[in-house]
Image 1: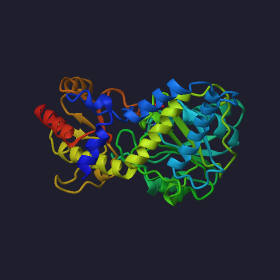
Image 2: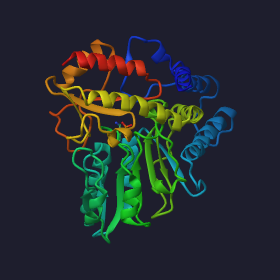
Image 3: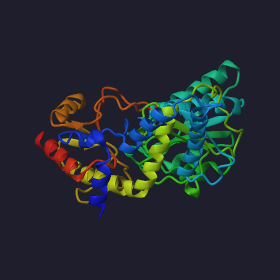
Image 4: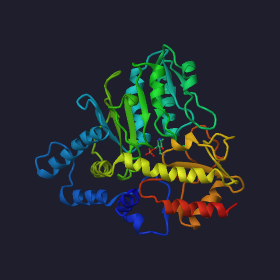
Length: 395
Ligand code: PMP
């Protein structure tokens, strides 16, 4: 069943099995790496390390093939319906990817009087580049209006009923988030597509969904133009990430400065990571982490000193919580009496590694810290129950 399937996968993470007394609950920051990824890196470095390019010797050719082959592998992983038209650009992570889309694609695309819609309460990496684009354009005398995607109180979801208030004839671009890094909710990008119509390019920050959910660009509900993600949150090495560009709306995505030495080792690790994830099955991974997420959320919201962020208040204790079902491996909470950084230290004294400082949320007050538990397929029911027991003892 699922439990033995999961146990088998968990055993493929050397750092996880080497420390049974610890529980890594910070996968939204970066994931642990399965043995297959470590071995792919080792194999590459010990058999064919060279620079990419049209080499005249096999190691260089093999490196070129690995880099180009990984571009195709990314398209395949995302179930790209038109891989001949699209492009994949490797980055160091989502922050760099979003900045590259803003600087190298959005700035030349926008004209005076255009409007763009961006998230003001998601990860800061998905706000700063768009504000910077406006500033760069303003220096050239091009005035662009940046409007905030409307957000529902408490849940943090976009308020699709109010999208009509911010969409207009000059709306030329939307930046959105796939899964929120604080609340874990699916941000329902299909509603944004419905509101802006078929012609407006949408850029999706998929940092918290790639590797966690089945993510198919052949699905009409995911009609977006850019998918930006971090490889290192999806089982690959630190310093990895990619931008996928559909190249069907607006100009083609041709990022400047791609002709350097690529992060070959990182790219090799990304390819191995995508192979690993596909073999494990993103739908099964999503089901596993959803089970843990629901278990943690449902118990924690009934523990009096805790407030789970993104849970609408006033729900009867035993009522179903639709938001919880839509959370994807992320539960963020506060203890009413213990500051979050103290709570983080207490939890680590019991072996739990959680995020307990700034969550990099745009517009959030740094003093309002919270603790974030984020899960991946290597986490277990036993870890969640142990965590709940410790949290319950802190009342
Ligand atoms: N966007 C979201 C939604 C994220 O969760 C993160 C990482 N916390 C980022 C962007 C930034 O990713 P990276 O650190 O890989 O650049």
